Image (cartoon, rainbow, N blue to C red; front, side):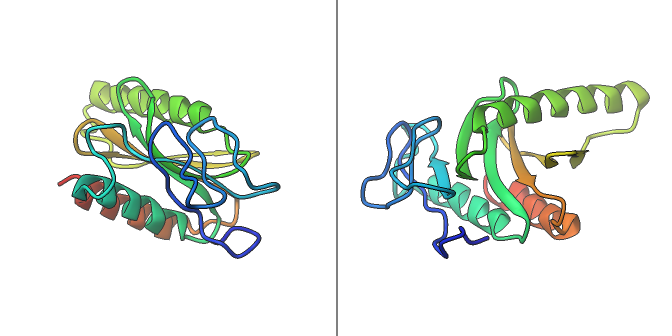
Length: 169
């Protein structure tokens, strides 16, 4: 997915904007770019730049975010809803989306367990403001995509499940 000015969203180090990449910012930090554009957060310290886990997480987010209609993607801690890494267009409230996704995943997983339906592999929630897609991944993480109504849900789901299976295997 391209930003309106044709630039792809970029990733920066956790907790600080990546000054070498215009238009990037940490979660909740304002971007130096005016108008619509990306806002990103990389994984926390301990999986610093150049580590294969960080690169895999970021590549996965990039693949999901390239699906037409996806406004952003993120890795979220399943237990507490804290964003681990994100690639979002400006204006997307990442912390709120992460909290909603984790809560939704917990509730749906609990309901599935109570009915004997088994492990939940994908959750889709449609609302007036867009579509929230959630897939569980390894190490108690969720991969989350926020999309508009024109998204190809099947393609987004495929990319999310591929990312969930490969990124932290």
